[in-house]
Image 1: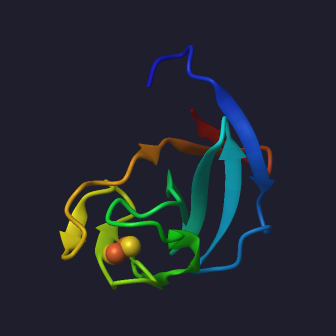
Image 2 (image 1 turned 90 degrees about the horizontal axis):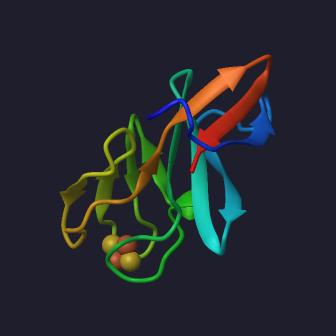
Length: 105
Ligand code: FES
């Protein structure tokens, strides 16, 4: 990510419970920010299979299982790991500075 990345504050440390997500909407795009094992991950909140919100899915380590048909994605890479999901999720860089969480869009 270049230095000119557009970092946006989305939350403060402590706002996201372990193995939970919050949703941030940017330009009509829903982005889910997950907190797992002391790391933050930001992905598209909408499954690439059909329309379901991954923030309502089941976190299993650094994987997220879609609540609708149980497709599984890697939170780190966005890669689809289990059918029926096939297309990867968009992912976004995340950084924490001064107790605030930022994503690059
Ligand atoms: S909508 Fe997510 S796996 Fe079908």
